[in-house]
Amino acid sequence: MTTDDIATTADIARLARGTLLPSFPGPVAPRWLLDELEAGLAGVTLFALTGNVQSPESLAALTAQMRKAGDPFVTIDEEGGDVTRLGGHQTGSPYPGNAALGAVDDPELTRRIYRSLGAELADVGVNFNFAPSVDVNTADDNPVIGTRSFGSDPELVARHAAASVAGTQEAGVAACAKHFPGHGATVDDSHLSIPLVDADLELLDRRELVPFRAAIEAGTRAVMTGHLNLPTITRGVPATLSPEAITGLLREHLGYQGVIVTDALDMEGASGAIGIPEASVRALIAGADLLCLGPKEHAETLEATLAAIGEAVRTGRLSPGRLQDAADRTRRLKEWLAGHSSAVVDRAAGLEAARRAIRVSGSLPGWDGAPLVVETESTGNIAMGPTPWGLSPWAPDALQVDGANGAADRVLNRAKGRGLIVVLRDAHRHAAQRALTTALLTARPDTVVVEMGLPVWRPGSAVYLASYGAAAANAQAVAELLGLTPAA
View (cartoon, rainbow, N blue to C red):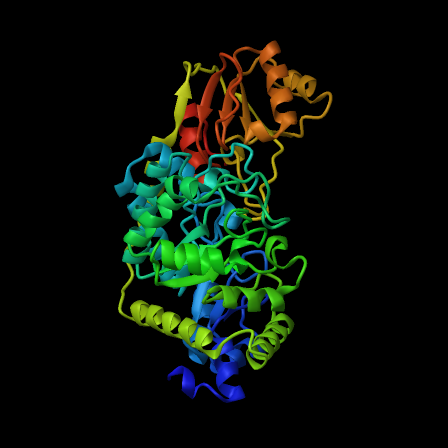
């Protein structure tokens, strides 16, 4: 179909549907969604917190149900590590995240991990993964990236960006490099505001954009935009809604011609001031091809967004040709997906990577009996969700503490006559974790400190283990090294 052929309201509605990725609650597709898929809806985004992912069997049944109604993109955020949806949100991921893979710095192992992740997704009918995160994490206090990044060195991140894209797509699943043009230098969470990236084009070219170039050269089938303000380029507009970022920087400067998908448009950084329907229109005008609406955006938001896109076309704000351009790109992606088969699941790669990622400072003590494990309070960010973490599965009487006044005395009383292990997660971002650890080390210099986030804060001369992540694989690797026994 040419631009001249696009004339009827039905044509516009069909093309508009072909840009949208709504969500829905529960493990069974509702009737409205199946009707929309029959009418040409692009696909869906699955979320663990909405009840879409309850077991591999139920998820496979769900994706099969949707495929009877259409040919959807079935998308999900499955990064491994701390951001996991495929069952790992209940038990922790069997694969370490990007920080651990960057610490190992073996691109072939990263490729193997992502190929296995892709195989698990393909096995349950998911064909489009919103991963890898290729942000260069240069801000220690970054509240949303952290262990989701391969590291702070652009060249290291680029090596693993290419490897993770290749591995994912060898499993027949589309990879999606994110969060363009790079969320790693921010100290705000785009779920809650519009983070600032204070970088001009020269700095972007030698830092943030290096991994995106590598992902593009590796053939990534999609790139996800971040809701980021780059004042010298987007002038206060989030990148997701900025023609200068999407068309200028990504399409023209980097030469990327694949599918561009937005991060969830329900996030404050995208739609807080204007609403999701208007944000959707602006993202399409800017050059996005697929719009992820968000975990709570169901039939009502879909209907309102379709109406807003139709009105934008009627008033001349959005050209039919822009919608057709998006349709052409998504059609080519679906053709690519149809021609690829899945790989073999290789969970052993996850534990291998987690073991190799651990870094130890000092000499581990030998304990006479089981040590007391103390786990500090540390909630994950919105992207991570309430995924379980820590060493409790290997320490039946593990003590959870929040670092409040008196916590150190309670721990020391429980630890009398026993070894002591304190488990942290991003202690550099949590004053209570640091205060508790310092108090414990003052009284018990033999305390072993385990950091399961980024190892930025290191307490003096303590015996210190860094796992570079809190996934189940990381926890098992740490427990093995400490000689802990799985709980009965």
